[in-house]
Length: 326
Image (tube, rainbow, N blue to C red; front, side, top):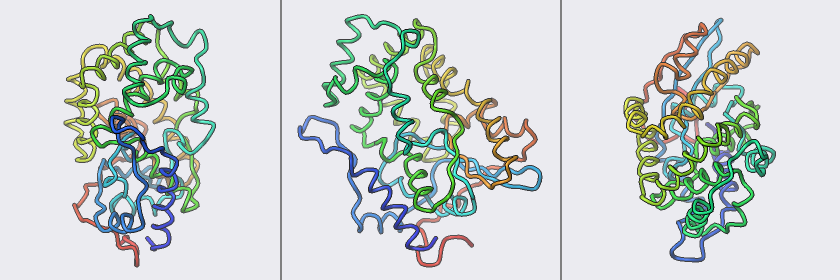
């Protein structure tokens, strides 16, 4: 990858992070920092492949499928050379949704309509407000969001105590790459589908999920579970991810079935449609969408694709002067 391309990509990541406020109170969760030029250069020297990458092929045309993580560490933000090679080879970057699309953020956080969300019991509202206070987020910022979105937002903020930040999520890095490289962007799902994945389900199920999330935040188990998944992602360990899912309690497993597994068939159908369009794609979706018999790799095989996992070779660093493709 030419040096200018890499620097433009990583500078765009810095721009994405620049708007993140710095906590004024020492008891607030840490915030993601904006990387300096020296840190960007160091990241290029220490970049390594993480996550899981597959090559798929059908009708003589290839593409790539990549399992992402929705939080990350600064040292994970720069992809390794095998992943970068796949990105360079692709003509279109495909994500679940485009995090840089202002309409996406507005759509998923818009106030819930009466049919979308349950009325929260007063004690549960108090507990959510306590978590917001603990996270140094004004309740006024959260209160108009759908309740499930409030719970999800507080969970992501809580991960910062363990050094994991939404600003370093794979999707943010990939969107920055697409923007800086001039590659086209496509999405697997509409904003409405993404919103429904977060806020959908019967009111009673939503209440149970919110109760479970708040309890996990209060007890510290939500952070532990998120870190477990994130570190398994970094290793590309799908077996560990499968075991982590099995270890969830019944309420959490039901939530995963609805918000993750239940969307896989639609994603696989969309990938097939985009592939039929003829452009070589790098398709990115959350790593949990890749796990098990109902995961995207297996579903694509069922649609006539040849799918092969690309094993990472462990090499470290990007060759910014001459590119990494060999």
